[in-house]
Image (cartoon, rainbow, N blue to C red; front, side, top):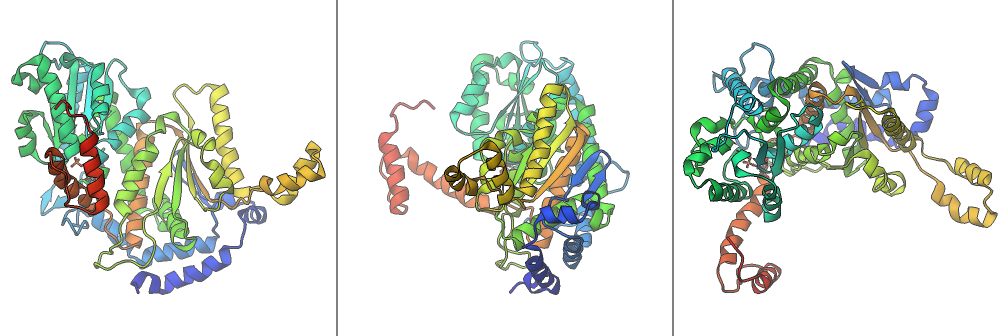
Length: 552
Ligand code: F6P
């Protein structure tokens, strides 16, 4: 039995859950007109409304006691000051240092990391300005018009999500492209419209060993050299972001063109580092630094605010409430802004690679649910796709609904409809529709008694579906930085409560190892018998059926 589920506070929460379970939020709102004020928090223009959750004041009090029981405050300090809390890789976890705005030292092995961080930001500024101002010239003396970021996972999703989110700030005659899939169609389709003379490649790989990225990078280099026909030209067109300088140099990238990462920055937390170089090139370094400022604002809030008013802490504890007490297996991230369309993908990696763990910090198998399945899509698209299941299916799917109050264009006829949907959906999830209400509606429509019998059960919405609503003024670098940092801290808090290491990712290793072995087998002509019958059968079928004239 784990200490967590055996603790008094866990048991108290368990019996509290039994009291809360039968209650309907519709009645909670009816009984307490101040519920919204009681259960919403602000940080500047960010409003975090968590009143549409199946909670009372007592729930929040008990969940905060759980956080105290798990020494959350100590763990927060350990992270921010650079202790090696990623114990399986013996590393500090310091993405917060990348956006630190004060003059305090942050030490890793007695070495202040801040001078190196500032030097990296200076180098990013210099380089991005050269590209943006067209001072950086390619091998035929033309300016760069297209930047291709080649990376995968954290070396792709952060820049992809953020550059799309801040699209309104982008320099529009400079196009960004992202290649992550080793499927040749991804790089093939991307290169189709590009010219080597005006294209810059950023090879983003912390390890510089990720097979997908290296295969794509080699293809890009071949494509480039086919036209340039001069290895020296690579210096003008290939940049690396990596912790493995040696491998990047060996690939042919000039040392001056390598932006350093540190082992204390996890891949999925790395968009604040030089992994964000493509973001800086697109929106400019001043805006990139505003994004860091927004994140720092959330860091300070997280570090200094009592748990009951602490946005990431409450967000995380609500997640624990549904995951561990209501036993809900998933939650949805539903942004209502076209430019946030990659946010669910980004947060899915950040959450599931962080908290998809079953071994606790003491090396024991856990006996409780850890990380949930995170999924999502643009809210409006989801409404016409999977909200049906959320409203009337058999699963409890809590959701985060995220919407800026205004946007760059803010055309009234569009934006009012959008926001009307935001408010209507959160209300529908909470209230549902009772049998009485559904019946009255059908009667008003004049349906026959016969049809009434068929329709009525289908017209009832149980409601009582929890949502958090997150509103902020507009999607800009500051609000984006704040939003992402909020989620990072949410995942951190949950990892602490579950007593797992949120910062390693051993689970991705097995597939990688096996793929290496299989790759050798695919090259030979003879059938394989080294695996189970299914894997052998699949490999051998592929070998028999594949074209014999595949180009390199
Ligand atoms: O999929 C595992 C992973 O290690 C992620 O954590 C990481 O973001 C991604 O691969 C890419 O790794 P790298 O930046 O080292 O190429």
